Amino acid sequence: MVVEIDGRLGHVGWANQQRDGRRDREAAADGRLTVRVFWPDLVPPCALAGEVGTILRTRGWTGWPQRCGPGCGLREGLVPLSGA
Image (tube, rainbow, N blue to C red; front, side):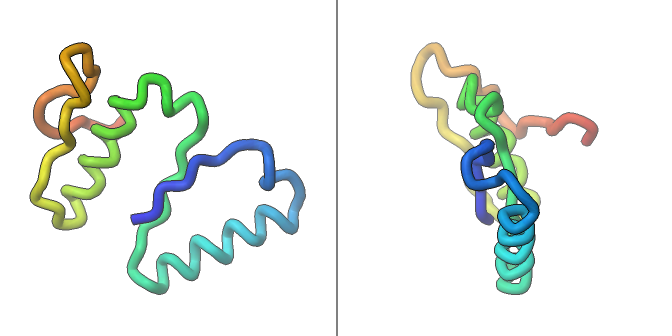
């Protein structure tokens, strides 16, 4: 799995969008899933970690995301994705 944090830098214009599309297709041809996230998705980061863990588990990972500390927002078990 490839997790890409997208932002404005490097993504403005048609040529840059085409480059991203080619990179995603190349990754898919190699069996990798590209998951795009955006800067607001990183706050709080623990929620995103839970979502990534859920995606990885649907692809065969048998582990679990680990809580980063006592105040961690990561819930126990799988994290349901919006619309899932």
